[in-house]
Length: 180
Image (cartoon, rainbow, N blue to C red; front, side, top):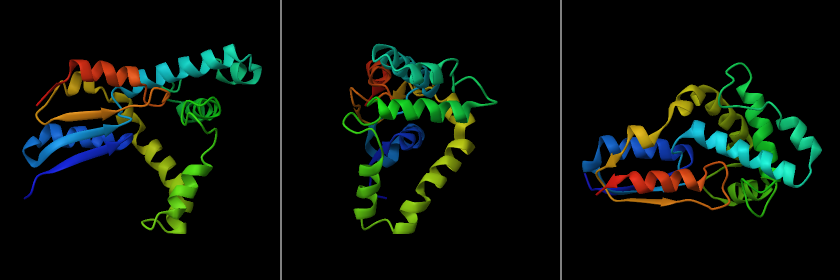
C-alpha cells in the first residue's frame, strides 16, 4: 500500500488523529483543520466567548438566552443549549468571521460536482443525527491526554476567529505534542 497524508476537518480531525495514532506506518503525515482537541473545553471557551460578546455589544436577548447555558454538562437538554449557543456564535462571527449565516456554505456545496441537490438538502438532518448519536463520545475527546505522541509529521490549521474549535486549544496541543 502506498503511504498517503491524512487530513481531517472539524469532527474529521478526531477520526484522522485516531487513525494516524494507531497506524502511523500507513501515513506520511497528518493535517488537521479546525481540530477538535478537547471538545468539552472547547465548548466552555466558546460559550465564554459568545457571552462576552453579548455583554460587550449589550445584546440583551443574547445575554438572556445564554444565561444558564452549558451544553457540555447538561445531558438532559444539551442539544437545545448547543443550538442556542451556536446560533449566537454564528451571529457574532465566531463560526465564520465574515458571515453570520450558512448561505455561502450551501452555495459552495450546491456548486460542487461531488454533491447532488438531495445531498445538500439532507445534510442538515444528517449532521444533526450524527451530532446526537456521537455526542457522548465527542464530549470525551481529549487529545491532550489520549494522543500526546503521533509518529508522523503533524500540521494544524486553526483560525484565530474560530470559536467552535478555539485556536488556543490547538496551540496548547501543538506545543505539547511529540510528533515525528
